[in-house]
Amino acid sequence: QVQLVESGGGLVQAGGSLRLSCVASGSIFSLNTMGWYRQAPGKQRELVASITDGGFTNYVDSVKGRFTIARDNPKNTVYLQMNSLKPEDTAVYYCNAQVVVVTTLAFYNYWGQGTQVTVSS
Image (cartoon, rainbow, N blue to C red; front, side, top):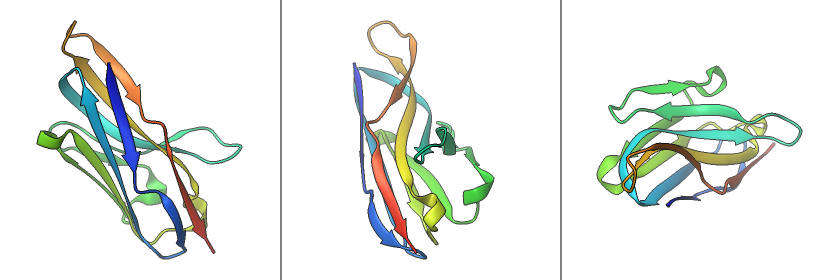
């Protein structure tokens, strides 16, 4: 079993910054791509940013230049630095990890429980 635990959400004024963290633990053989998704009320969940185990990154157009994704492989942790936040960034942010588990060497997709980010205008 693998767990993803997020932290760092909260309430911030427009123009402010937040840093999200997600720590993966459990029966991990390897962590492949990790990413952050978000879901606003009444909208579908969307990919915000992702990073491969080699460090290649991908961002949705709406956050390019404002958000930065990074990972610390020895700590099994992925971060999302969010700057110049806008009210439209308000959503529940979910951590995602593609994991090869120790027991079977099978590939699974795991999600965190989500952390609320609210940006006031």
